[in-house]
Length: 457
Image (tube, rainbow, N blue to C red; front, side, top):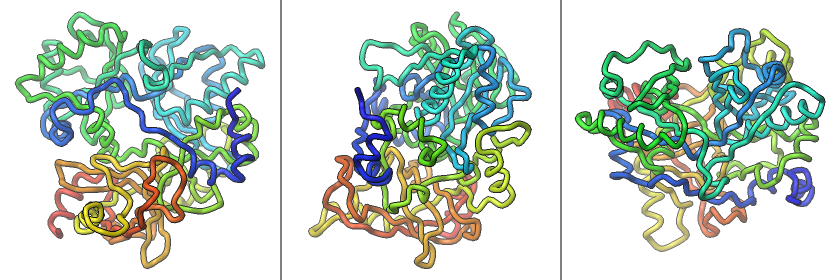
């Protein structure tokens, strides 16, 4: 029997030591790393049109039953007052103190047995699954089916759905060719029923990398026919397929933090920690080091998820979140890293002496939860999370949450590297900490980076 999270914390002494040293290996999904090269693939979703294959990297939880919505409503600040078939929402959950568990996209496809699907990293999905299983045991009318991502399922087990995102300034032209007429008017986060190359598909209107687009999904067996039709329709617009390398960096431009640290450490989650396998808890990477696990937590407002919070119903953590909502202390930003400091990190790899922590391109993450200290005037003012390079703007950047007192346009410092160095194999056991100057910009950053920031560069 696998070790539970509760057992692992007892063994390690505290949650921070467990997660800083836990092995969370890099995974390879059955998608080419690059179809052309990751720089051109990145540029395509901002300059022409790109196809992103989202079929493999996310966990899916298929849900149904007459009691489902009441269960979800009880653990989520999201409103369900008008939730219905043909609509999706960014579902979040919090603990008793109002701190974030995670987020995912909840698709309401139909009222069939598996008509609702929660898609995302497993962080939130595991908490939802725990509550659904508990309700099933109490005789509630609710059911679920977990479909792990392709890396966890293993070879030979296809997902239920293909998921292809078409995105970029030329995306509408490609879609007009796909169905021989104007792009249907579909509201943001609404789902349309369409047909591509004779295949029935559903399409969610949203965007992944700061550009408008559609996410198409349907039976996985039909996926090749659909993507072939997309490539043919987009040929004259220089359409590009996006490989795994480029895709990993897309949240930097959309401003979405993909793996927020989950607040599952207090007494209200004690039974959950007894249920959750320790191997699913992830790992912490980065310069943030505290023996108090609460120092790693975020509120929904810290990460720009406040729009999902509605106080029109009772839910776990409501009272605390109401107080937080009155005066949120931090906000989500983009940090544009100083070119000289980035170059110095790279240079340290090819000169004598102890190098800085290796800085990978296009994405730099060496823990499931990337958590780096942000300083201003020598004091911590926030946490930097996802970090990587965007070729179109030729900028290294990260998404961060900063104290509201830190003004847009000001310069802060990101502490890069660990001290003490953790034992997880993803981290260089010989490296030194360095500080990287960074300019505070909005999230998403597009207009600022391409106008104000470059004008002052």
